[in-house]
Image 1 (spheres, rainbow, N blue to C red):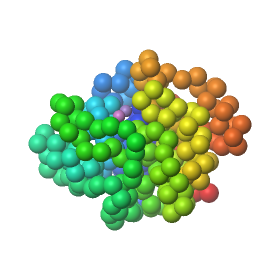
Image 2: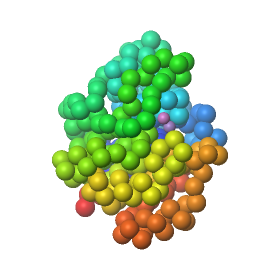
Image 3: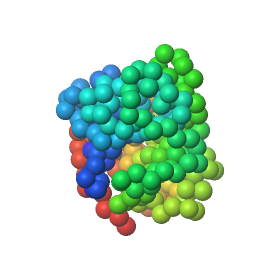
Image 4: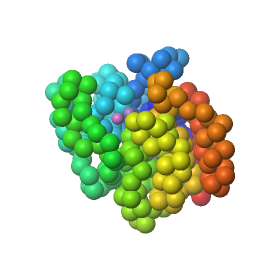
Length: 228
Ligand code: NI
Ligand code: MN
């Protein structure tokens, strides 16, 4: 399993021969200007919520690749209006089996409107139970609901927002990692905009102090994921 970071909350997971792209926001991201969005391959595109910084390239990549686009009902309905045909709607608490494993759409405490102001339903995150159990939290505050994920899943790696202001910051992400019972955290949703710039050394130090691993990938960097 290979995980590639394309900046902000956008990752590509390669597992079981398929490529799963999360929250594509590359073209408008100045930090990701070295990434060639037109060369990204995807079999699935998973979108946590409707905000521009999670959906900006979804239509473009979806149309080119023919990937199955998975999000909540309202986001999927909007994407279909933009011309995407291959979509799968979910909603909170629902699990569905795909060729890469089971996928559950879980709660996030945030908001969700689409780039043109349309209603985006409620925001979420995904737990992917396949070759590895991976949690992409989307944009969220720290929430007690995360304890349910810790109780019911054995999460190997969690992608958590750490940029503060719009989502959890580092301190809350450390508590979240306790709630989900996963000490292997990959940070996201930081540095992209002025208001979410973080001190990366300080963040890593705080995670170290809590006996947890925080990985901050360079944009374009790929890592191999292994189960505990
Ligand atoms: Ni958001
Ligand atoms: Mn966001």
